[in-house]
Each structure stands twice: as C-alpha cells, then as structure tokens.
Length: 290
Length: 295
Image 1 (cartoon, helix red, strand yellow):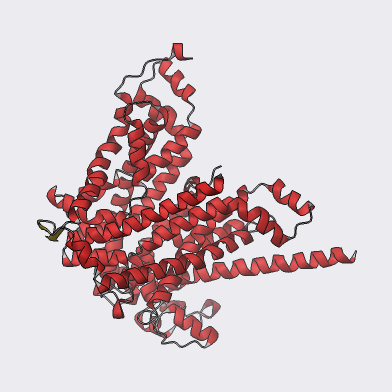
Image 2 (tube, helix red, strand yellow):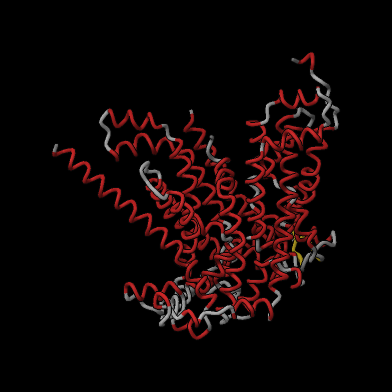
C-alpha cells in the first residue's frame, strides 16, 4: 500500500505543478494585452499614475468613472483611423481571396495533371520557398517604379497573388485528399474542367481553404514593410503603417497609441477565435504528417 | 482504366497554373534576377543607376556598420532560438498531459501573441518596455523592487528584443511541438514504461527521438525568421534610428536604411544576397542533417 500512496502523492504534486506553471505562463503572456486594453481607456494622468486600473470606490475597488472612450474618439476624429481600418480590411481580404484562388488552382494543376513543364514549375516553386523576402524588396520597388505602380494598391496586391508557399501547400493537400478517380468520373459525366474544380475539388480541400484564407488575411493585416515602402499617400495607409506613423508623430500620446493598437489587433483576435481549429491545422500541416 | 480515360484538352492544366505562374514570373522570378543585376550597380532612388562592378560587396565587407548589424542579428537569432526551443517544448510537454483540463484555454493563451503581427508587437513593446511608465518596469518594481528606470530601450535593447520575441513566438512554436507529441505513438511510450523506463528515460529515448524531425524543422524556421528580424527593433525604437551605438541595427534594418532612406538599391541588394546565401546555406545544412538521420 505504501509505495502506491507515495506514487499518488508524487502524481498529485506534479499535477499541481503543471497547473501552476501553465497558469503562470498564461498570465505572463496575457498581462501585456490586459495592460494595453486598460491603458487605452485611461486618461493621460492615470496612465502615468497607475500601472493597471485606477483604484477607487467602485466595484472591485476600481475608479470605473475615470475610464473613458476619449482615446478612441481622438483616433477617429483627430486622425483618420476609420479610413485606415477600411484600407486594412480591403487589402487583407482581397489579398486573401485572390491568393487562395491562385494557390488552389496552381496546386491542383501540379497535383492532378500531367503537362510539359510541370517538373520545372514544381522545382521553381520549391526553390522560391527558400528566397528570403527582404532580398526582393529593392528590385520589386524598382519594378513597381517602372510599371508606375508605386503608391497604388495594385502594387501591393499583384505581387501577393504569387504565393509559392500556398501553391506548395495546396499541392500537398490535393495529393492527399482529391482522388483522381473522382475527377475522372466527373469528366466522363461531362462536367467541365472549371466546374469540376469549383464544385468537386474545392469542397474536398475545404479545411485547407479556410486555413489558407486566414493565414493570408493575417499575413497581410500584419504586413508592415511592403505598404511602408510602396505607399506614400497617408490616405491609403493600412493600420500597420498608420499606427507606426502615429507612434512617431504623437510620441507621448500613449492613450492614442494604445487605443490604436487595440483597434488594430481586436479584429484579428476575433477572427482567430472563430476559426481557431482551421488555423492550427493549416499551420501544422506543413510540418506534421496527419 | 486507361481505356476509358477521357482526353483532357492540353491547355487545361496551363489554364489552372497560369494566374500563379504569370504573377510569379513577373513579381518573383524577374525581381530575383534583377536583384543580381542590382548588386553590380549603385542607384539614386529607383530611377538612376550606374555600374560599379564588385564595389558594393567590397564596400560592405569593410563597412563597420554592416558588421555591427551582422553581430546584432546573429546574437539576436541564436539567443532567441536557444531560449525559445526548450521553453516551447517544455510548455508542450506540460500541455500534453492526458489528464489536463482546460488545455484549449492554456493553448490559446500562450499562443495569442503570435496573432498580433510583429509590427503591433513592436509598437506595444515600445510602450511596455518604457522606463518608469512601461508595464514591465512597473510590474517588476512592484513585485521585486526592480529598478524602475532600467533602460530597456537604450542600453539593454537586445535583451528587450529577445524578451519581446520570446513573448511573441514561444506559444507559436509550442503548437508544433504539441502536434508532434500528440503524434508520438502511445503504444511505444506504454511499452517503454512496461519495460521499466522512468519518466526521464522515456522522454530521452522514446519521445525525443520521435519528435526530432519536427524539432529540427521548427528550429530552422525560427532561425530563418529571426535572422530577418526588422519590424521589432524598427518600431521599438520608434523609427528614430538604430538605437544608441546602433544597438538595435539588424541586417534587414540596414538593408532598409541603405535601400530606402539612402536610396541605394544596389547596396541594399548586395546586403540582401549576403543574407540570402546565409539562409540558403542553413537550409542546405538542415536538409543534409535530416537526410543523414533518415538513412
């Protein structure tokens, strides 16, 4: 009986330790978000006076009446944040839809067709995966200058429609989950190639479709260096660039900066909460075989 | 089967691959070749260039600022990956306990910073690491009576960058380790414990070898990403410059400064190629190592 009791005691300690460590890790990770959210609602005075919520007579000992939406009002009235949000939504969703379609089509062609040059295309796609993005900054900028696409959304969108990584991911997915016999029988039934693709192939890779849409949306939403280099007109700025210039121009306006950051990260956090499963599946699909 | 096969019009596969291929050729393949041409040129903005031969590389190699950038970048990448990997694996091991409740909450909590792009993390860090007013010094002061004026954003910029990166990416890498751990065959672990292997031995001889391919992959992508770090220091320094004594200068930041502040796309491309060669070398090394392992 004794060794058993000792073992269960040890197990109890290790279970408690696990919970303690994980709770600690979660707290440390979430603390900056909490701090940011609180700071966005505080006035300047309270920002400097208190680390988190201002203490007072209200519920939980907090001076709730001192919090306000003032910082949010300022970024929407003194600055053009509503416009920046629309720009980000437009850029991220357009990029996500376009790049997902081209990647799925390209992946399908490489996975389920035999054609001249296929191996060459495949080799090029695999090579492109190791090209670091910063290498292409200078020559792409020059190219956009010569195409007269600087300071335009086309200059941001067009290069994003060539995602080698996406083509690679969709090719792997198609190889695993689109049986050739199904395409074959659709053809025998007289179904056109494009219709086969949209009504039979795409539904089969739906999880990947969701994951890639989201990865691409997030990637564009969080992209800074490309819009920073390509766009000049402040009216076209997405949130990332707008917030960075706010940070430079209003250095000590911590309330506005924190409110702006909160507004910038809230939509993606919401989107993620809705689509968590797909996203994590997509992330790990490249590395871990199911 | 083949007898019944319906012929596919020969242009069909090209139709599917065309949207990708055309944009890819124009916006990836062409700039890639142009980047080679640019390494032999000096430019003033995108419109004026002159041939300088191998001068760019010659100048870079004797450019002290470039070497500071290289030193900072290597230090940043190696330190952050070396701390991050064991931390991510440790968290994944904790979360892989079969009896754990609330796993999805913990996973989401630890993963959440990865959702926030490095631009927003950079801006957040610029405030959080602020001496006296920032959250970090205030909390550390309240908890451990830490110096509230500790200069994270000037003297200790590198540790601050590493902490910010750990905060952002540890949970992200943890997801990969957790997925790998969940794929380790349960029978293998069970039979090892029947054979009398202790927890530590089971981890060392069963679990670790089984997740090694994923660990290698995660290490590689983390290294590649951190060698390209840009937004984090750039925004933590509020775009003022590269910090006191260039403490926050990284290779990509220097590329950005020379290419887009100075306007010399040739010099920037040469820096880009040095970085690219380093990254390609790492990838080849990784492939070699994982191939040797398989045979």
